[in-house]
Image (cartoon, rainbow, N blue to C red; front, top):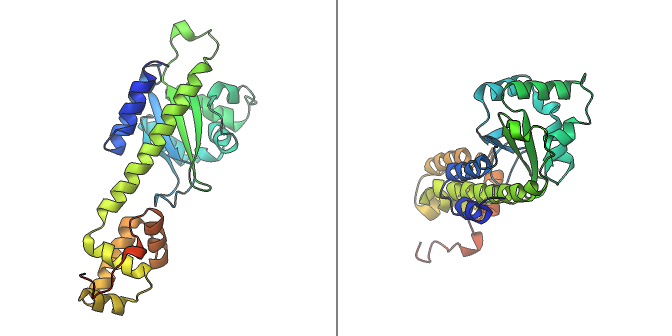
Length: 253
């Protein structure tokens, strides 16, 4: 794969999730693939994010809306392959096994009409059951390649770069979540993880109970958590807080 080491370095040293995605797209364009979709196939509690087709994408916007409106995720053969296989694959290897009269292949025909006629699928496993899918497509197949067999040597490099994208995207998302909390919110989360009640936290931090509860609401919003226990669990898993390092109110807080 052309310039593999250079693109690995560019992706892993990206400063934002958008930069990481853009660098990945640049690498894929070197091989004729100009349409990318980085998707969370299921919920990602470790990131505080729900499942989302095209969390980062350069797929046509009209196609993304059509895909969601028709609930194509339920019949998408590429998504099914991502769910069942850890190996990178060409879409054509999947569609070749489908009956042309069945909805999955009809969906793929519509995708081709929208400019997604040929592609690669990547399945990446995260924490526990968390699963990421990367769709790498091209809007047109060059005439020079129309009768050529698929280049399976390409899959290894694409898989490596997809892994770099995912790990970088994940790390930057977690870093962003950490940075989003104010010092006061961090303190309240930490004391909450120590089992302190809101009245106890108000005494420790010398603020009112209503102020403590106001900060909890902001914490829930920023961590996309629907309650105190969930917020604390997510903060611990993401290492936003470390309760063991909490000092008592009398230790220079």
